Image 1: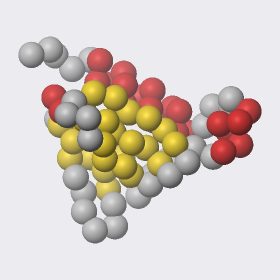
Image 2 (image 1 turned 30 degrees about the horizontal axis):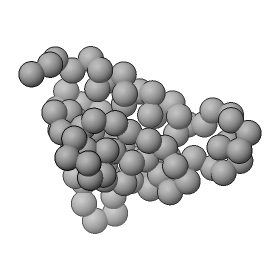
Image 3 (image 1 turned 180 degrees about the vertical axis):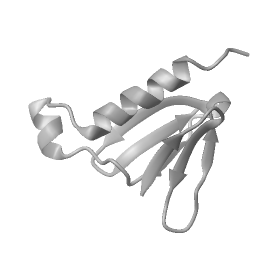
Length: 83
């Protein structure tokens, strides 16, 4: 499993599909134990099991690769031109 960023949006590679979430539909992203959640502007979310955040990282407040991914996605989201 992996996540790729492009000029168009975030592509999540799963076992059976590879949904593309356009930047215009994306409002936030969060890291959790079960992976990354891409939150859409309509309030729904898509989850990928790539880059889950361990409970140990959450309890101790230490950064993980999931935090780095969230930061990269949010930075890319902020850099998108407005409507």
